[in-house]
Length: 225
Ligand code: ACO
Ligand code: ZN
Image (cartoon, rainbow, N blue to C red; front, side, top):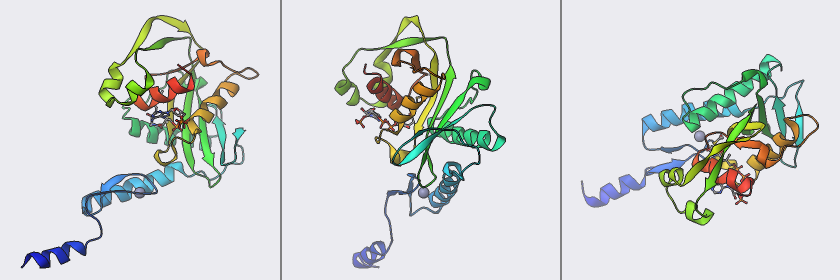
């Protein structure tokens, strides 16, 4: 076989190297059967998890041009709790959380961002807390942005003095293809005005538990640190 033949054979294949699925955002190699199989499985599970069928009893706590935010409380019907659980499992898998225990399940509130085409693209899990440790930013945001993930972790230090706080964000997640459209900001805004009936929490009264690098960048921007 000559080099020319080889060239023709290669050019006939569909994809080389990694591709990103435009629906589920998974990066995989389309030329590997094993990868394609894993993708098909993940793709299917993601679509099932983020699909919102519509409930008879839903608690809409905010409405926007592109969707709405639902709040789910522990006393809600089983179908709502099951969906909240399913989304939490998806988020925990993406965040690499092993232990999925919540501090006080009976007082947890789950906020889901549902788009007009019935996809759950954002999730926030809030719990009551009594205190939090303020993160002390030692570097400017442009400095932090230019770092790798590990360096970012080290660039943050917490105060040793606990501050009183009311509401802890135990998870916040936005679907990969929908980020930087202020969905997380709208989830936190909505949590602040609905977590305690009749009052709006200040940014000092909320805290983000053990944030990821993305979570820190979002939280510091949101809280105006
Ligand atoms: N890098 C830099 N700045 C960011 C980032 C980022 N990755 N994400 C948010 N910001 C800042 C920006 O200033 C942004 O405003 P801009 O887009 O006008 O510049 C501002 O925060 C508001 O961002 P939103 O659009 O409201 O945030 P988004 O909807 O993209 O969601 C989130 C942010 C939830 C952190 C998302 O990136 C995500 O799901 N990441 C993966 C999961 C994760 O790590 N979650 C946090 C875990 S920590 C915890 O749960 C307590
Ligand atoms: Zn896919």
